[in-house]
Amino acid sequence: QVHLVESGGGSVQAGGSLRLSCTASGDTKNHCMAWFRQAPGKEREGVAMIGSSGSPVYAPSVKGRFTVSIENAKNTLYLEMNNLKPEDTAIYYCGARERFDGWCYTVLSPPSYTTWGQGTQVTVSS
Image (cartoon, rainbow, N blue to C red; front, side, top):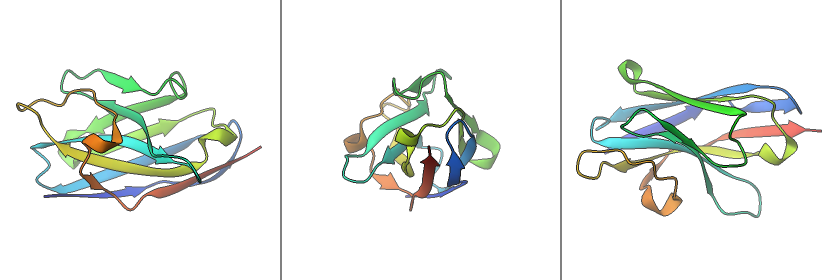
């Protein structure tokens, strides 16, 4: 099993920045992590992740504004969010799934992820 804890959320004005962290514990070696978010009344959607190739993938709505990175020694995944917009308001979750053939493919589909953190609220005012 792997356990996830998110932190770093808060309230900011449009154009502001936040940095989220997701710290994993347990069986981190055999799992892949990614960022998701869920706004009120909407389905959970993929935001960003880094595959085993080291290349990041982003949702079109955040590309160019968000940056995902990972610090393997700390088992922590980060999400640097810049130029935040009101439509970014959501609960941000870190998700984890088992590696496929030992590889983390760049998959941002929520059903593919089996473990979730508690979430951290991000609120962006206009």
